[in-house]
Length: 375
Image (tube, rainbow, N blue to C red; front, side, top):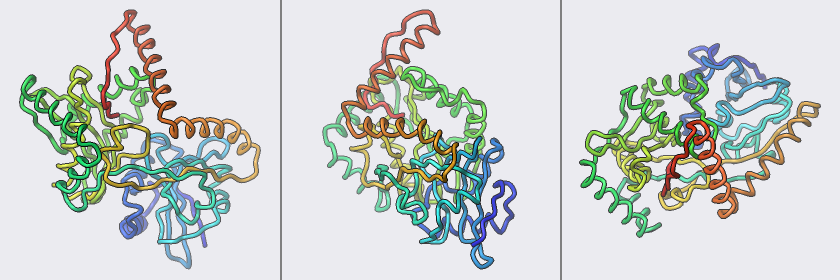
């Protein structure tokens, strides 16, 4: 086999077509974060983006997109922004992972959302976790029956709150695939506020991420698009989401809502409307991504699986990276596996967020209870 490393922008039309062909032929690769369009967008914004083009007998059999950082530290394309990564290849392609790293000039490659079971990386998986999905392949009615079975009480409560919101704030309206940039700005403002309130780092404080979202919002094709959705009460936006889709899969990315309407559980309400419109648009599933949010357990009707792990070649950089990353990854796994620890960590972060906001505003702001906060 021959491995050539280039920037995504240097791929020719035949290689781009081959990428799409390989992705479309394997259902396990049906995720927009694995699409060539996402790699091209990342390459336009960040100079550390690379792709290994894998050839066998003169024929391209795979692509491995990644980020190459200082000292040969490799990261998945999009890093913390994405919920899926891996090889886009012919089924069953098996490479020696360290040989691949050597060709990519990487000393180490950490992954936490790898398509589970890919032969090249399977031996290096340390854990496999479910990523809950809304399975719409047999229609929305069948899906919603599963939601009712999962938790009939929660479903009735959400629908009751939706009717209450309509009575008190205005008729409920859902917009699918908005192209309005002002609607996107509203959503990102909500999300930034959520990051601050909950003690997280505001991703949109980095201008390149905002530019990436804008580019994805403008992307339109049959196999790759950004999708912006919003729930309104009358003319007032209350909850929305921005994600990416292939021809058949929508991936959850940035959900958020206006905390003024938190008592109505607008995030869950939005997800149910989004599932219905996704089904009507011909999508087969909504991938909600792995993670410990309670609402996913009763909104889901199936699971995909993603793997965590690490590949390294002997080097000082790999050793230092291991010492810095492994304890953090183990601690995160322990927290995610124990709901009481997850809730405690969430409360601590929210407390930090309130203190940070209070210090910034020089005045205390009352805490907002976020039932079923989707984000």
